[in-house]
Amino acid sequence: MTASDFNTILLADQTPAEVFNAINNVRGWWSENIEGGTTRLNDEFTYQFKDVHKCTMKLIEVIPDKKVVWLVLDNYFNFTEDKTEWTGTKIEFEISEKENKTQLHFTHRGLVPAYECYNICFDAWTHYINNSLRNLITTGKGQPNPKENVTA
Image (cartoon, rainbow, N blue to C red; front, side):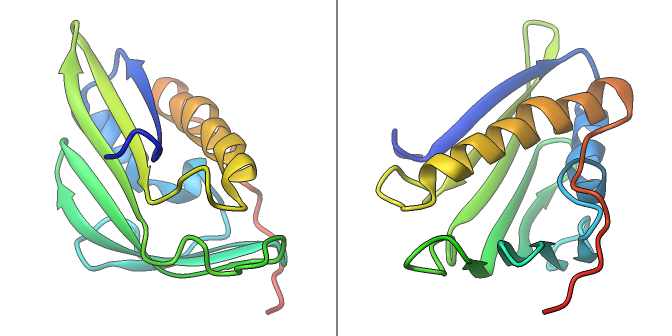
């Protein structure tokens, strides 16, 4: 990780297994509009939010109760000059134990302040990880984007 990669940390009373399972329940914290597999090595899924953002992820590392890594295979933003800014970046969820709690260290490697989308993505990831995913882990209910009819 470089100092400029987006990252955030959360602590939870739940077990590493519970945190791992919540991460892999992408429809439960990011978007109900996810198409494809989100739990096994080499699974691929597509996220889409209206005509604003669409991306395809591949799970390139899955270590139960420890780590999940997504590779962004394809990305489209309608609000940036370079529509593909995320393409080739990696999204990492690292799970460890700290002070009798489970720590989740989230890093979006390659999402850096030089990106046009950085401020919007910073706010979005902060919400999804520190609010929606945290709530899914701690209460069993996240705040994902609702299912929508997408035409693309």
